[in-house]
Image (cartoon, rainbow, N blue to C red; front, side, top):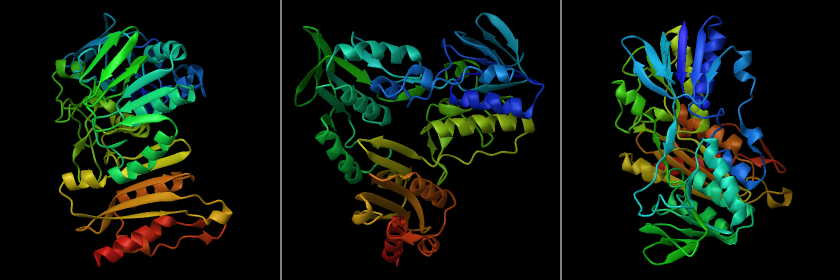
Length: 438
């Protein structure tokens, strides 16, 4: 079998490895427009912060050689000839039996006057973006980051770590990390960020960016910021032009439409990663919310279904998210209260602020918000902010939400306790929800 994979990001790499594992004899070609195999979009801020180098975050160079996968770098796929089952890449023709589309996304820039001027940058999985910033950052000491999602926050943290005197983080939304946190929960980490020197401007629309005397002037409704450079982290758009040109159906969110087996409208072509239209696991609404882990899962499933037949359905995303900000770990899964209400759910919520371990044993204040659906009496969302490790709690909530475990069963779950270790704080929150629901 001949398999072509367009895109060498997380989804494409995951797919290529799984195809090889399942089919030792297949011919696998993977194509990338970049000069080097890329990295996850959350990685560059750590290099720019100075705690890692580019070599640390690149995919192992021998991965493809060991699996006999042919990699085509600096090679753009310009056409998919579906009737002939071949692609045109770098001016050459490559036949395929099955094709996987995983071209990822490109930075999406808002229509702000002056946004294409000098010293306005974007960040993506393309190493060229990261290395351009790497050269610029040491020259200056002030910047405006437009976009307060995960990458914007990470870049603001990187600039503070590089001893910048002025770092402004701007967003049109009313709170930080709006896709993952509700306003009051976000406020708890916003206070920390401002104390550490990041100036937040939320619910703020940038009307223009212009240059004057070697500075960038960023105009807001109530003031003007003077900085050395501007970084845009305002989201991304799926790379679907090739699919659209080939007549492959595009979904309502702008991603490539796929079925539960990640097949596109052409049964011999699959899609995976950020380019595809996903759906949430709770009520099935269409979304393009992706984490690196989700890209890897969809790449893996596309490969399994491609080789073994459509026997591994994708159940959708749980909208999971995690980040660390100045020693505080933030983890979320499922809907925010705001999103749940927008989707028509009748929700009840509770919040808890306390250490999971007694302070005398080193426990630190943590904040929890749980969101439940009144009709199904199950959790639909959880938000955690803590100076303690939270990975286990986030995974616990993800499983409870994915499996739609009734609240009364969660409340009765036998969990361990020790004064020095503490107890599961989520159970107290679940009990409060059960009491609210009556």
